[in-house]
Amino acid sequence: QINDSYKLNESIIKLSYLLSSSGMYMEAIDVLKMVNKSSLSKEQLMNYFIAYDHVYGELGYYTQNHKIGTHYTLRSKMYKDSIYQIASPDSEIYLSMEETRLRDEGKLQEALAINDKRLSQVTINSPEYAALMYYRALIFREQKEQDNYIRCLSLSSIADIRSAIKDHASLWMLAQALLDRGDLERAYQYMNFSWTESKFYNARLRAWQSADDLSLIDDTYQLMLRQRNSELKIYILIVSLLSLLLFIALCYIYRQVKHLRTARQNLLKVNTQLENLNKELQKINFSLQTANKDLAESNQIKEVYIARFIKLCSTYVDHLDTYRRMVHKKVLTNQITELLHLTRSNSILEEALNELYENFDSAFLNLFPNFIEQFNSLLQENEQIRPKKNNTLNTELRIFALIRLGITDSSQIAEFLHYSVNTIYNYRAKVKNKARISREDFEEVIANIR
Image 1 (cartoon, rainbow, N blue to C red):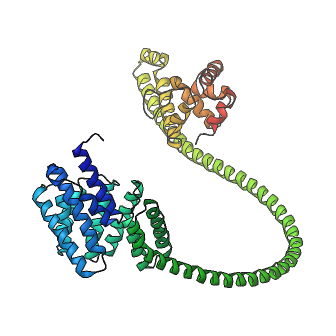
Image 2 (image 1 turned 30 degrees about the vertical axis):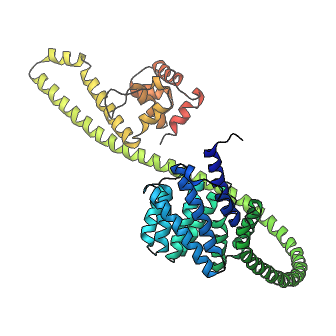
Image 3 (image 1 turned 180 degrees about the horizontal axis):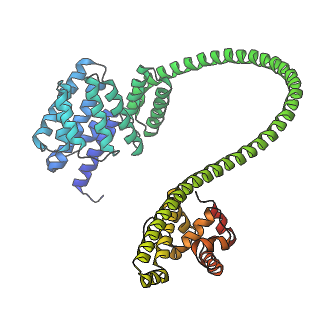
């Protein structure tokens, strides 16, 4: 109505392509005859030749008369030559025609290379991708690569469905390939789906193409269903017989179960008694294990401290003998003033005590090398006690080391450390106030440090 010749020609060319795609070839040619070729732009002229190439190519491929088919094929080739003269060598239509020509001439590797180039320019699962995978499948079919053929048809079919394309050439060819492989169920599903979509699209040619295949697949599928039904009847009969045997077996088992139930009740009583005995034995074993550990630890402590005691006594005898000789010498030389000064000094006592504590610390840390770390883990983080020297204990650590050895009486601890009882009590209370656990449980936990 607006008399736009450009848009009118474009619509006529597209309508012709759709008519030939749906199998209406004569109508497609009649529509193309309405176009004024001289008024077409270069792009429209190429589309005009493409439409003629398509309709005559379809006619040449599907006609039943060989002579007429050859005529149509020549007409299609003529329009292809016209497209070659207009199209750019890098254009999609030029590459498509080259790929088809090379495939038809048996130059399959060259055709595959062009297909690779075209695939690199499209988006996966697009309509263009679906068409390219279909043409790729045709190349693999010529190469007898059945796995790649089926793979490409599958990818093309997926892209068709995701793009809402109803003309399923890839899907019904995939159904044929699966039928040849014996995958009847999927072949039937795919062909049935393709048939439904073709009816929706109203592509009479596609329906005619797939009718024979669908009929063959349907007949084979129905035969398979009849065979399965026959097998199912046999299985039902076998299951029925097995069910009868099972019922008889269950009756027999029920009688046996009644006899076993009484025996099980008696066994349950015996088991209960055994469980009680086992629990008592476990308690006794645990007590024995604990006692053995304590005895082993006590023996180890005794061995270590007896050895230390003997060595210390020997050392003190040597010191006493040395001291005796020194006093004897000074008496002989009439050094009474020096003797008085020597006896007033506490240095000898302090040296002896330091030696005693060093021996005690060394022996204790040899028995309990992780005592300091475990002791500090019971104290608050900012209240932990660290000795000034490695492999030694300070006064607080010695008090609790004695508690770990079983000496809990403050008077005994005070006597060993040469402090008053009140001082020992204050030390113990002060450390327990720093504990991160209960004060009442602190010394008990210390006594269990290993």
